[in-house]
Image (tube, rainbow, N blue to C red; front, side, top):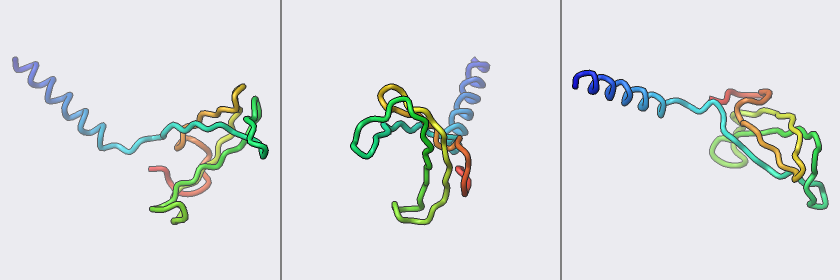
Amino acid sequence: MKLRYILLTAFSIAMLSAFGQAPQAFKYQSIIRNAAGNPMATQTVTVRATVHDGTATGTVVYQETHSATTNQFGLINLSIGSGAVVSGTFS
């Protein structure tokens, strides 16, 4: 019984501390399109991700770039927070 209580307590503490951590990255997907609106299949693109403070025109607090290749549908998958940092800190 004591062991069960200790394990439950340890698990609870681990879960609480996990929720208190900032994420290391978050996932982002996009369809890359050309000027005519058509998906760009199997193309290498450079994407710049920018995080603003408060509003879309607020101060830039973090910025990074990614080089990605689209799939046959023009889709890219990024992990924002793990790109090449231009400015700021992700945390």
